[in-house]
Image 1 (spheres, rainbow, N blue to C red):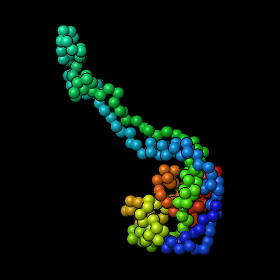
Image 2: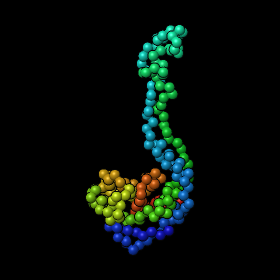
Image 3: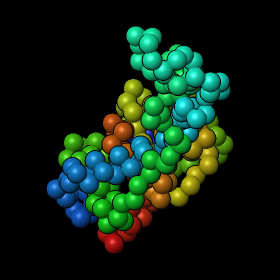
Length: 209
């Protein structure tokens, strides 16, 4: 699969790159994508929720009424879950929501996500660029040149670039990651994927293992 290489002004450089069919041209595996996205979202959960159970609620343990003859259900103490202010039955406890996935499945999920974007023609290959200093206005100009200012976009760098990252940090609809930080969720969460030339070799090398 061939893709045109654009410069940061949105102009065609006249060059083309070959996108590996083993990464950008496979039949997407929807279940692998589902599992990888599910794991990513599960890992974002803090799991610090907690409700007090009967033994943890402050209150007297004195029997609040006699056992028989009241015409109502028997009750032991004010901590009874049936009463206002009582303990919670089977309430949430702190826990980890994370779970493990095989590396091969995660690679398949990312390849499937890339292939989905390629099939939808939502991948742009951009030649490497840099800013002398962090400048949000310069990054907005790049988005306008690529006609992405009103779309959710993900820029994938070959290596960490502090100036480009800081230039995009204040923009809600656009994000910048290095090729080693990519996740299936991030790929699918963006309308358009902007791959810098230097990132292609790293992506294909990592996913072709």
